[in-house]
Length: 524
Image (tube, rainbow, N blue to C red):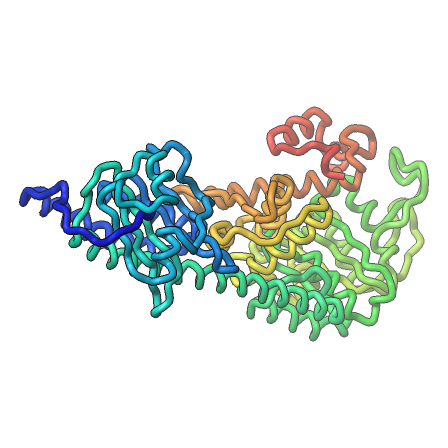
């Protein structure tokens, strides 16, 4: 609170030598705290509230406020008011005219104003001070680089509550406050500029990707650029490509990019997730079957390999193909021919194969769970897709991309993303990679109530590696079940339901979905 008249030399309430030492210690601590606050990247009002509380406690006053002019330079606004025992008359966003008020005079002249007795106050300030019981106080200009930014005010309910030495110290403190304000404003302007540049960069990247047919692949890291360069190189050939990478890294997007840049781009890209199909049905899904080939085969079925003729076949999770099916797949790759189940007629196909796995195929070969000749046939051109933890510079772009994607879908306005959230997202190790990030951002948009997005990131304890592995396993299980449920349109039971496709009992799958928190009606 600001009150007017001439400076005085009233004795302080802490005249004893012990009180003086304690007071000096408190003031040194205040300056240190303010320096620490100065270098922290707080929002301007939060920063000023923290500083005001520190000053009030150090100076043993009743209230501390910070005031700043409006754009027209006609009124001063109380941006912060630290007044725990106030009656509500002096509060944040209170307006005082620059002309005729003590706080306005302090701002205009750039000089401190102090009052030691209530009777010395000018009339406009007197009534406000009387309502709050303030008897003495001071107003100090907040000056930085020879420019007055605002005013710092202190008020006491006792008369003669401070001395000229107090004013000298407070002027030093006011200089620190002004520096803190400049720092906070600069930080905010830089953050806003970075956000704007990131948005513009994202827009340009979307335009470039649209022209380059790298639809949905977000990132500018060197690791991702290397993968895309390989895609450009190998796409024009018909050689088999093996995509290696953890779950959720975007192997399907890379497979589509290879297809879209190949000479087969006008034909179909056929996808088959080998882990999502039960062992007994995988051969039929891949090669097709004739009517009566086995119990339940009441009609003829064309397999995915045949559907992909003249196009591309993408076999995801190829490491899960059963040993008994592998020789037939090897023959199809080498000889470009196969037979449907229940048929003796050989069919020829012209298919470009792209396979993907998150498993170590060489280890499976050593354990005799995967044929070595099939591995060598698939491993003609291996491309390793880096996990998200190896491309942290892509995280901000991905977060903004997914935030915009789901905000549009949910008809919400997301204007910015919390800086604290972004820092946590950059530090997380991402066991589920891009898919995990997308799920977290989608959830954050669903729960968002304002224009600023807050994203909750899981925290790891000492067992971080085991927790990460458990997180990966959970994501893999969830992802497999969700994919199959989407294929069966949410149907769990029945001959063509998700349970049958996974080779599980209906009750077993239902129990597993409950543990993983999967609702079949919400995956569609």
